[in-house]
Image (tube, rainbow, N blue to C red):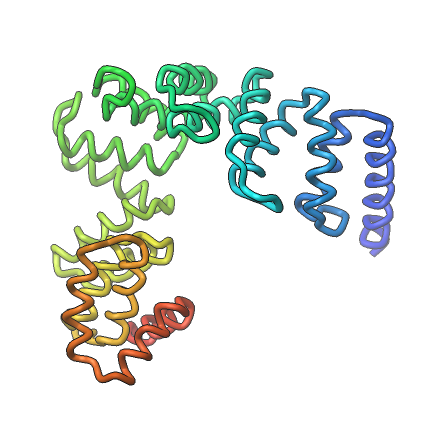
Length: 315
């Protein structure tokens, strides 16, 4: 009871102390204060104040603040998205040794975001971060070797990079490693190992791997398991999972025929850019009355209700 009463007082004292240090120019305190406003920790969340203190700290060469500012501008967290500003802050943070910014800077160079595309610079920064054990950078570097993007295609190097990231439970790397085992790229073909890695990736929430596991279950006529995996991926907006799940409801596999659900799922897949879904959707639309078609379109705009209906069909 006493501890519960004391805790808010300690938080208030801590906040006041950090604020005073920040106002006196301490870059680390400014970074801490910015994060408190950013996440609403011990204080009401305030994006404007968070940006102010991150910027004050970053201008004093605090690499973490610089990296976070890069992310804020890249994704538009409380500000208008600005790739030029994102690149500026990632570069400063990367040059100051921030490993996450080094990977992000590599990504900006690879995609030409905020700067002219430069694969040589992308490789440089991915390598720098990967050598320090940053899993995203190891994966990104592996992708460049695997696709021959800005470097000679080298499946052995791709495998090494993917494997390093996969050892850290990096879900996309696990799936990519699984694909290499399945195809026998740079290593002996091993379908059993491929499935183990796909399963790990799916269990770790990677939507393309979840779709693949769903397809495997469907091929074995394990329909309920297939639907469960497709749903996990579909809820992340994975277009192939939305299409496959929509097709299952359209065909009525395992007695689950529901063309309204099917159309709603396919509409979401079309919005995610799956052209195959459009043809299937047009076919299903012909069998729906105007009122049912309106209901199906409304479902696509209300995913929460759509998942509730899917749950009901599974009972």
